[in-house]
Length: 206
Image (cartoon, rainbow, N blue to C red; front, top):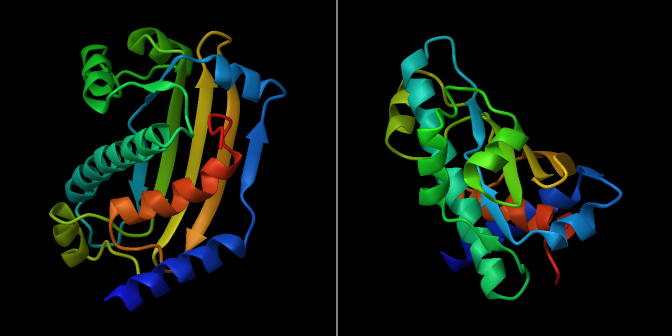
């Protein structure tokens, strides 16, 4: 089992190193990021490729499930880095973030990053988008798969962005397409993506 796990992570590393991510930095990204005291990770936008026989409601429900899973995994990953001394900012807990957003009517009511900043009362927000070829989680994923929604290839297009609330601007964006052995759970996927993305993230100090 250990050997299989090692091989999986080796394949992930090879996939990541085989292509280049597109990264945007504003000229003042690092000082603005370091000036932020509290940041929040908002629920990712998740889309899952649907087969011809896939039930639309099943896909929609699975996308909600994956969004919450990815948000929690991103929060856990960032919190771990903070405990290791790699991040100095406080990270608003997911329950508080989602409760405030729900009261404001988001995401049913579209909101700009600046408006989300005000609702959450933070200095910076991290948003993300995930386009999946197939579901990552159990439960609704089973129904989706039975209806022909699971793709043959494990492929993910991810975009992660950071907005500065004080200056009301995008200061960093990471965009990349991953293919192949990315693992079969949200935690494995997020760990693989965040390890790579964090190398260029303005929050990371070490």
